[in-house]
Image (cartoon, rainbow, N blue to C red; front, side, top):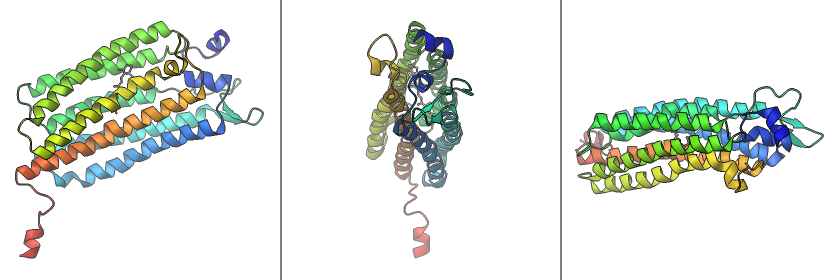
Length: 293
Ligand code: RET
């Protein structure tokens, strides 16, 4: 390990695996495909959010606009993330694996693009729900500021921590813990927003809001899981340098991204449609009466 650390320093564990054992065809390709799925879904989501814009009342449309912003930024950053994976490791016929070249490694692999993408997306995803629900007791600007403060605090501390996942586990866990405190605050505020939003909402919209909370809790928890991945696989004080952990991290991030950005946005659109209908804006029958007449 010491020798590897001298060669790779604060690079993330994906590079350590790439230098030590390399990636088998299956692990390398699976990672590439999962990363590709990630940005492809964002482009599909972009179309969905643009095309469903008119299905909700005007006052809810900012939620769709924010989903569009999230889709564009996630599409671009996940594309770059996938390109980073492809260029970091080269096929080596002598070992039949994809290796980090020890003589000419070029740009190393890093998950940093994701973190910077979250810096845009996390505040947008948190603000988005505020344009669908009506808060009963909390004030809009106070909730917005708390989301903004804890969202960026969580990401920046996590970004600092991920550099130390191999070289300094203590520092990595300290940053991770600080980040988790911000995360708990976000969960607390979001629960309040959803509970208040349910009050007075039509029954179906209440159901969607309930699903949004479950989805939110599950998908947002996957991110700290992905951060911890090398330790979840080793279950010790040293990170596991295993390709399974690397593939596991790519998959976890991708499932989390699709759930927390795309499915979340779809559920918010569905909730807004129900709320629009309750206020007399029913897009399903709109315009058809005129044609019939
Ligand atoms: C980090 C560091 C370790 C501790 C925790 C983290 C939480 C990250 C989360 C990210 C959510 C990102 C989303 C992106 C969508 O575009 C930073 C990994 C708690 C919750 C929703």
